[in-house]
Image 1: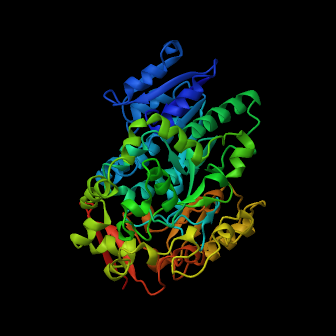
Image 2: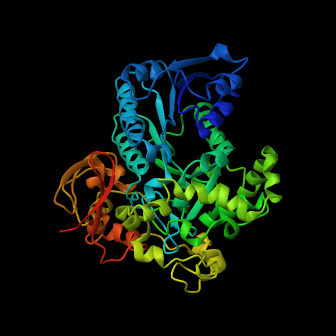
Image 3: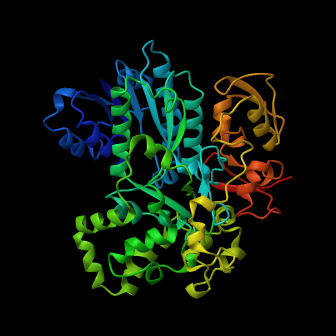
Length: 511
């Protein structure tokens, strides 16, 4: 059995490699860059197993490289991805990898008579910003990618390409936020951590558990003689860590700071972080994959305990004055071009609108934590009383009305209703869930997509072809979009956000 891996040098990819190498009858083909920084680590993991491992050198957006990688394989696991902050810093890389690379990989697989099965790793970021109104999401929820998040946009396009491909067996896994051993270094070199809203819902999963999931999928598929055809292949699932790993942005930052004897309030001011335009949810259906493949092992508490033992030097932080740590470690990042403080100082009106609703909203936040509403302290975003434990009760979760029941079989009638909820129409007079049908969106634009692609959240809008976000306008006539968009946006907002040809953040008023 031969398995090809892309993105193997990533935090999830390394753990997938560690798990797959344990399977004695599996041969691996690994796509890597010749000068990859973590290549030595990869080779160390493969030590003693090189007789069943082959390295393919190059980039996923090169057709000849993809042809070499997928040829003669039984499975392809695509984890290649340019993620924030690198996608923010060099948007071109995200386009090459997350969008063009996926297209190239799909084309290479489609060209084969004996096609491997494709497991494509997508992202929770497709669901966009959530707050206390709709903390929980499931497959089928609208894909409202946050303005200026080039990572989410390119991942959405890549996922669409996979779902619309002619690959006979493929599955998309929308990965939630991943806990990994490099979290500290990855978050202390850029202003990215200030994008995390303190009240944003975040369901974590560890890199180790994610690796175990992929290995269990392949093992199960092999041992059951490919009997996952009806239950797993050609579907979309959410990868989560379970209810025990459902926290808020504040919680996860706080867990990290507890290692050095502090809290978020010791090192952050309330106005350091965005109040909207993030991407995070609690997965209402994260149990589905776990029921099938039994991979959820570690909790956030387990992770931080392990992280603390691996980074003993952090204990020294308990000795240093908290004000000094705040100044030297945190406030210095406020000057980074990827931080709200920088946007404010440099009059980046487009981002201030997207992440705060404007300068006035930002100025009103202030620096007094006692006046800043936090969900875990029993206050919603407006400061009104809220039962946090009730909010985390999955059985009572308010869910988005999708126009159909995703737990039941979806047919032509349901697909027609989804289109109507979006303010559009299903133009095809007949067709099934996996047929490529013709649709018309609320702008009168016609497009073709499989019924299943639409049922799992994709609905054609300008973001699929341009680097723009037009949801203020679209939500006014789209009942599915409106349910989520207006949780954090006023109905009288009339902005459209876009990148110009230099990938500078811009905005305009809806005419």
